[in-house]
Amino acid sequence: IAGITQAPTSQILAAGRRMTLRCTQDMRHNAMYWYRQDLGLGLRLIHYSNTAGTTGKGEVPDGYSVSRANTDDFPLTLASAVPSQTSVYFCASSVKGSTDTQYFGPGTRLTVL
Amino acid sequence: GQNIDQPTEMTATEGAIVQINCTYQTSGFNGLFWYQQHAGEAPTFLSYNVLDGLEEKGRFSSFLSRSKGYSYLLLKELQMKDSASYLCAVRDSNYQLIWGAGTKLIIKP
Image (cartoon, rainbow over all chains, first blue to last red):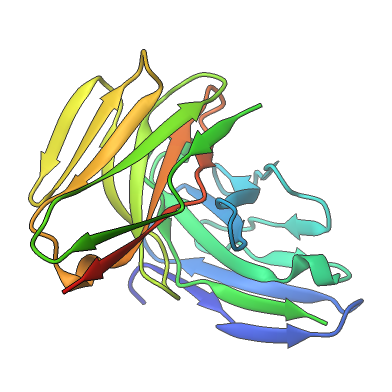
């Protein structure tokens, strides 16, 4: 692995179902982030983690949860998906908390019907 | 509230120069980033400004005026591969990135 990987690449999900988007980085970056990107809007921060074992809420955290059990992995869970969560989800990481440049994974395109 | 403004779309000719503007109103300022995003792909880092002035990196340059809440990205000798969206983001007082909606740049031969 080189950089950040996300899985799945895309997913169609029925409303009400639970879904976990996976994100793994091999750069030993301290901080990781989850964004959603919707047409006509800027990237919006969902949750972040400045270091393993800690997480924080971003601009649009409702309906989402995260965990950071180790440095490499930062999964995002939708407990009960709703159509408004249809979006492209990007995971990103940076070296020193929020003070450094963020590097992005390839994204997951999620459709909730 | 916090706000980042960029033009929605711009068109330019291959070989020419284009300037993409970004104005911002944020709670605090701790740097401004420009990212490039090709359709269907992830954003990739282009430049970072934290002090006033021009930062040059090859064909791309980025300018910042903190007193005016203004930045621009200058792309020279445009190539077809420069067709992409360009995202402006400001790091606020909480060190979180606030993102503009992006400027879609269309390059014509």
